[in-house]
Picture 1 (cartoon, rainbow, N blue to C red):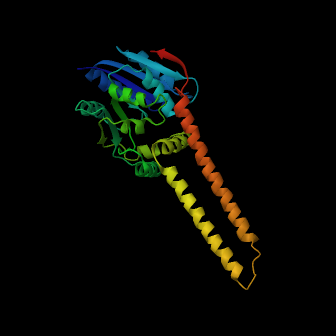
Picture 2 (cartoon, rainbow, N blue to C red):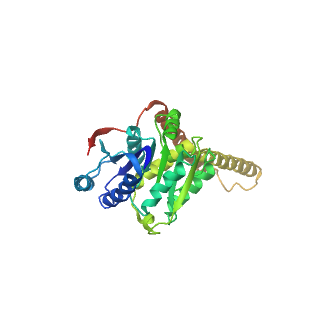
Picture 3 (cartoon, rainbow, N blue to C red):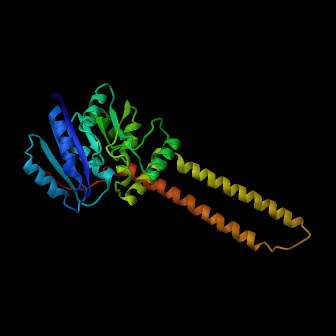
Length: 309
């Protein structure tokens, strides 16, 4: 039995179909290998029978460990909810399960810990199965434009040391995208892969599109220079248009044929100019919004209560 204190933090949102299998798999292997263990389940406004399934499971499977359920006051999304769960975790090492869909063997959970104690502070676990096209596109663009040297990708879960948690907290209280923060905090990190029991299961797994879209935009702003490049490209396009319009005006001035009065080119240029101005203003305002959150907001989540099971 390992002597280190282990915390398990898992995100729940309408997860009644997967919660029992998750508890059987993860708690089972952890109880068999860790002497000190706590489980923190973050209920992010579940509207199905997730909580009933958890309470029923705990009644039928009495545990000799701490099991806490963090009830968020309203739906707040994956990152904020997991930040709340991680902040109350007290373990030397913390497992973070952003998704409780289990398509791996219990040995994979222990393998991540064994890899961590080799000298790493962050060990990510990913599936060798298929991923959504949108996910592959996001990670490809993110890694290409990232300001850091570490690369990120789709992960099933991860285990992190207390040192990694403390390091990230020194960077800022508000953590907009944990995965990117962990991989770029300067500590040793690695990724291990497993063969999924169903190669297509994560393609079909549902997510909240609006939440992931907002997270992707914020991540691009904070961790990459993608929007800076877009701004530069837009500025270059308008510079080219300005030059072409100037050439057209000069050519029209010396032309003998006055076939155009000039209003078409003028209005077209003004329309394109206004479009570019508003695009740039949108990007600037988004930058300011993220900076305000990073500077002034100490936390981005609201907890209703913590239930001990």
